[in-house]
Amino acid sequence: MGRDFVDKIEAFPIIAAVKDDSELERCLATDVDVVFTLYGDVCTIPDITKKIKSSGRIAMVHLDLVAGLTQKEISIDYIRDKTCADGIITTRTNLIRHAKERGLATVLRYFVLDSMALDNIQKLSQQGYASQPDVIEILPGTLVPKVVKRICAMSRVPVVAGGLIQDREDVMNMLDNGVIAISTSCPEVWRM
Image (tube, rainbow, N blue to C red):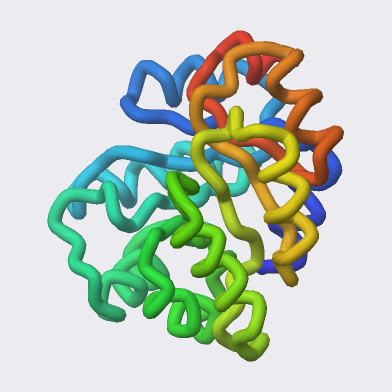
């Protein structure tokens, strides 16, 4: 699934990030191919992913934001066995390997707030393939271009920018500086 996921976002580099049911409905009325689900709980996430999948889209679940899941591998197993999700998003590097073993696409999310985040991205690029996510997502998505270029150059996997992307200029700025896609909760950008 990982390669299919990367191919899909390279072909259509706008990812809808949804935080509730009304945003999901708005998203499903657009042409976006990939949906990052940033809400739900263990009772609702199976239905949310089913709705995304039945519309022909790739469903990615932000594991850290689903109420009732833990930071343990059992949460990966739950997502794989009880939902229609194609993959997971997480800030927890320890879950990537297990998710890949279970056939899920993986996004490792970094909040780039200081040089420690850059150091962690550099360390990730030195790990073996089994520990590498399919893509990393850097937030906020409106980082200084010089920093975005540096991250894209050091990363062994493709980079997605997310958060605070509000218009065409933000999208083009990130794409021009090396990211393969952007994720946003802004419906106007979904329609670009």
